[in-house]
Image (cartoon, rainbow, N blue to C red; front, side, top):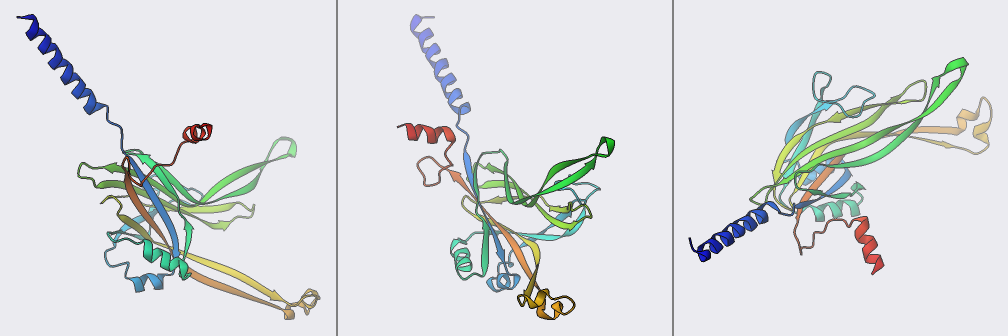
Length: 276
């Protein structure tokens, strides 16, 4: 074998190795997930016809006092939620509802997640309660316990070869059901899981999360309402009930280099820009 043929074979193997490395060493894609949580009246939703293409899925309720639970015999059905894919742009409709005060924007988070990784979005409040525990020698110790209440979204997007996005969605909705004699809130959680395939930039909606608010209002006449015995005559108590539906709009977008969709900058990137 001539030296020239040997050199050509070495170069061919080197080219194959470089091509193989180029296939393996691919920068993972990122998906920007934008979430909007709205409080809308059910009557207005019926007028907009947003229920036309909705398909139900089963929610499961966790035992009281727990937030996250595993599916199994310990859970029980708690009504149906609704899921829909919206191929049209809902931005204008949502903006109109918010402007006319027919809907209330509760939160608008967004998160960038690598292809195939899981993102965790919490939308709600953390309630802190002081719990007294009996200690030795008749003493009590006070412990601060946190109870997250609201909506937790567990999202896992995966970019397909055709450019569509397969996303696993696991919503958990927790509420305070009661407060015991020790002033400790009792919470319950509803959760569901579904996998959907949507286009890049398409919006999916999770609905069917009904919320009822009871607001107590007391009007009183100063001074006279404080009089003993007859003070109640100068007080007026009313209770307002309001039913609304919580809707979660989820829009995943593939982050392309040079496009307008950009992932949030890291702390190191911000420091580098400030140092320039």
